[in-house]
Structures are given as structure tokens and as C-alpha cells.
Length: 117
Image (tube, rainbow, N blue to C red; front, side, top):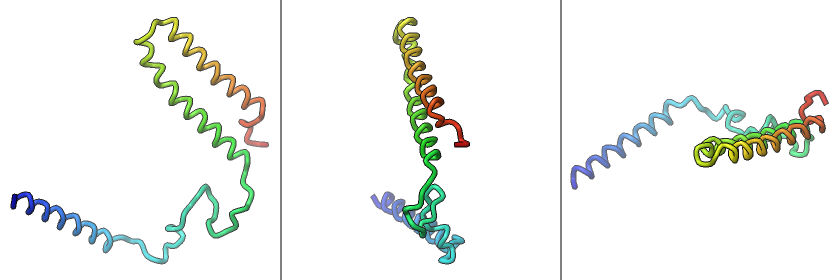
């Protein structure tokens, strides 16, 4: 029991020493106010919150999120290959990829992929 308490005390001393050294040796100062301020997508937090931003940038972000989620949905299709027969797996894969391609075609027609608009 005393061994356990001494180990806990030793660990606490080591942790507190490391935290104290970190605070002492850190190069941060109060002069770095710009670095410690929140940064959100290039907006200056001290300016007006109602400034317009590029709608095209927003649409590209939404497209990225949609395709990111779709890629996450593709991953379970791969192990499904061993669980079901080949024809069912092929139909599921083709159906999913057709939905992906139809979304890409729609985005292409809406000129969401052209950065020069």
C-alpha cells in the first residue's frame, strides 16, 4: 500500500514539474495577442461580422463535404464483396456510383466547379 502511494506521489511530482517547466520555458508572451485570437476562415475577428464572403467558396466547401461523406459510404461496400454474391455486389456498387456521377453532372451543369465565376 505504501509502495502504491509513493508511486502516485512520484508521478504527481513528475507531472507538476513538467507542467511548471513548460510554463517557464514557453516562448509565449502577452505581446502575441494576434496569435492567441480566434481564427476562422481568414476573417478578422475584430472587424464587422456582416462582411460578405464568397458564395462560390461556400459551395466548394459543401461539395467537398458531400463527396467526403460519400467516400465514407463507399468503404463498407468493399467488405460486402465477401458477404454477398458477385451480381448483387455489382448492382449495389453501380447504383451507388451512378448516384455519385449524377451529382457530379448536376454540379457541372450548375457551374459550381468553375472557379472563374
